[in-house]
Amino acid sequence: MTEKQTVRVNDVELAYVDEGEGDPVILLHGFPDSSYLWRHQIPALVEGGFRVIAPDLRGFGDSGKPQEAAAYGMQTIVNDVVALTLHLGIKRPHLVGHDWGAAIAWMYAFLMPRRLDHLVVMSVGHPGVFATPSLEQRAASWYMLFYQFPGVSEELLRRNGWRLFKEIMGREGDHDRYLRDLARPGALTAGLNWYRANRSPEAELRPARPFPPVYAPTLGIWGAGDKALLEEGMAASGKYVKGPWRYERIEDAGHWLPLDAPDEVNKLLLGFLGTERPAHQERRPRRRL
Image (cartoon, rainbow, N blue to C red):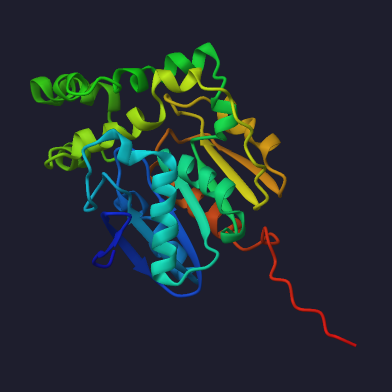
């Protein structure tokens, strides 16, 4: 990948990769990744004729790492993405997200429907489905509760050479790289703050709010070996999408789809982005007779 650039948005420095020419595609990673997650997708999309922008979202990689949990609310991070598009002169990108990046992509689709072309979400389904998780999903998501305790979580994850963190992660994703990234000053707290700001137990007591429908053509992808997120979350997401909806299950992949099945993911992206009618076509002014 090319060298990262940086821009200051919403009082935080964002590092990002910007490669290629053509219709813009923004790739959003999750925890505990960075834009490096997309190293197999970026060259394939560039070769396919797209301009690809992959930021290190706030708290990760080479981007700024505020230490207060309030700095990681979903709308704040969506605003980061919007500000990045404005900085780059991008009006209506395709948006591709994995893990927390998928959650941000869903939220972006709600809040900025006219600034979105196609939507691709991996592993994480629509928040309307996740608002009432099954007992099985709650059990699979136990770590989200564990991450809620400031200071305690950090200490236990680091203890004995990061033993607990290694047990949680297993040999999945960029497991060795995560340890180096999270050892940076403030990085572990910043990453855990995503959960503290958005998945706290108190959040479940708030009145449920209706989500606006998603009008963008949407592709949901889930890996059959995902231990953290069950299929119910993605498979049931189509009922919230008013635009064209497509669901793909990848059998030989776990949670980290871009790494576990790069060729299949690339094929799905190249076959989907730009193929459906965009969510909002530009309207030409009528001629006066």
